Image 1: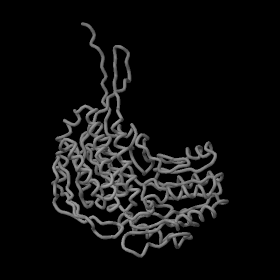
Image 2: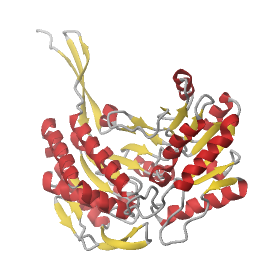
Image 3: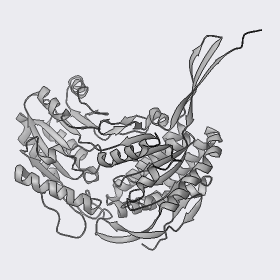
Image 4: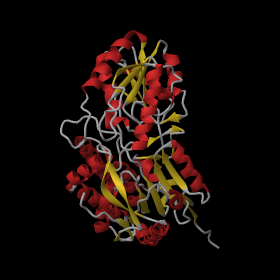
Length: 472
């Protein structure tokens, strides 16, 4: 790609201290160069955000929100450019990339419409207590490689609307769409309000531990989230952590197995399974187990696995070699323990391709069941007792999402109430909306994103408790 990408620091396009390759996962070959920050540039970015904070926080919220809406407009106007670049660096099919970009536009516009109004806690005439929400300061946003556009917006939108400034550090394997976003922010926002730096996973501690960073917003693995939390502890920084999941789908015995199998397949294989709330385990009643597995296998065999830039592709590559090797190892173990009905072997071609794979007859202690695979490999397990399957679904340190599938909506909802996760969807999957709070339970996160409560995460309460002076 013959394009010069730049970091964004204090309103300036910066070449960086060095560069590194960005690999197209469909080919395994470098297609672009990314500028790399060093420790000094991290410090400059944080200093710029700190300097810009007082003026931005003092800007009326209607003006801040209008600028966030303008970012959304500019993103929409360049949606095709963003989608093509997203497919090149992340691997997802072009139609899915466009869906992510347009979802990002919707998310920013939703945040631009949100407000946190002062809340009167007491008004007795002589004593008035009002809760205001004030911005925190400099936010460090660290974003992952599976949805590198929309997961930035989940942090950028609420941070800016509530009056914070921000330093964004994207994943090193998918940095380019964030740098493109930086170009838009440079044109529309005051210098220092938004800064974008890139690294090769070597500057995260510098950023999260910086004394002038007030909050860290991180999306990624639970293991890395623990490190972020530890780095933030020294300065008692606010943190929002959206971490891993091992989401279970529980299929009830009153459904049409072929119909629901199609939905479960979609929830497991979207974005090649690289979604924090993808279906990672499916639990199916014994009586319909064979039919359900066979339908999943049929769908997997019909998938078009190819370069995401090619028309008709339904499943692209895994995003990077490290994830490719991890999924391969889980798959090899599963092949020895269970029965593979479809897929099972990486494609013999350049790039990081593993076709949709369905595995049955695994025990609950199999690594593919116990761990988050984050790839297009779905274990399907049978059950006989509803209380037992709820226990099995909850038998994990993770608690991000889950799904329940049932014709009797009342019954399905009662089962959903017993699933120990932040969100449970009934008869649907991945129904994430900017206006609805999203947060994890257990080791799947701390704090939350989206909705009005997502705005609150970027503020702190400021209580004004006033009484009138008595007449002398």
